[in-house]
Image (cartoon, rainbow, N blue to C red):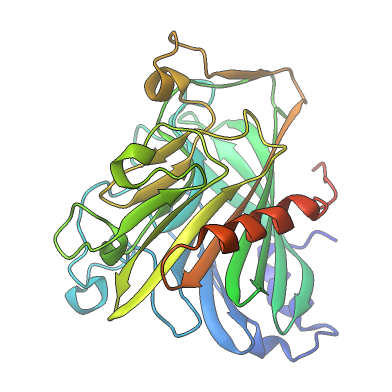
Amino acid sequence: MTITLASLCLVVAQGASPPPDKLLTVADGRVEIRLNDSPFTTLRWDGLSRPVLWPVLDRAGRALTRAWPMTDATADAKGDATDHVHQRSLWFAHGDVNGVDFWTEGDKAGRIEVKAIERTAMAADRVALRLHCDWVGLDGKVVCTEVRDLLFAVCDGARTIDFGIVLRASHGALRLGDTKEGTMAVRVAQGLSFDQAGGKGHARSSEGLRDKDVWGTRARWVAFHGEVDGATVGIALLDHKDNLRHPTTWHARPYGLLAANPFGLHDFEKAPPGSGELKLDADATLALRYRVVVFVGAADSVALDEQWQQLVSEPAAKEVKR
């Protein structure tokens, strides 16, 4: 059942166990998610050019994604770097969709607008939402549509967020361009970066590469770990085996950007220009699945491989056409 944003609070309240106020708080343009009655993250699109998840908290309440520019309060931002204003916490977008830039922000960028939400599952340690979005160009016309499934859960002691994304060429043929500016992305907290002031972090890939060597390479997963509030913590992004060009190429920067991008082959692998683009005929779809893992301690290859195996063994949510 698809519901309007205005009726989300009412529908969530119907028949939920435990009570919905233990799991979801709904306000204009935001839905706060809690697991086991502990804050996890907030889905936000209020005043933004796309839906984002911020903050992303571990089970002790430590924020693993950058606070700026979601807040510019010094006490909250904790000395965050103020580069790349469009890199907001945790998001999905791409820099060239039929020539429209959905990656950056401002007058020359497109918008991903949330049109409706469904609550598809709810339990103390598991909450699932489905978003229906329009990707809107500079002229106000819809470029394509998206159904996005989000599953927030606890898995083997770690907190996880599963993304199931279906882009549909609903308004004519679609071209996703060959650019490094994309796509499934996290901007980590300052303490997980490794070339910034206050950054004591490291990157690690499933292929054994570390730090700056990860950029542009292919891997099943990449993790950043470092220090937040005196504790060693980390966040990983996992690429599903059925995704386009798996294992994906990675736009992973020492300053704190962690992004899975299967399109930017010209930048990442020095392929001829346009090699990474994807064309979809009218009404065709592209399905992508990812898992974000929020963990305590340094990145553990065995544990992350197990998380990846669990991700690929779980069935995808049933595709919905809107």
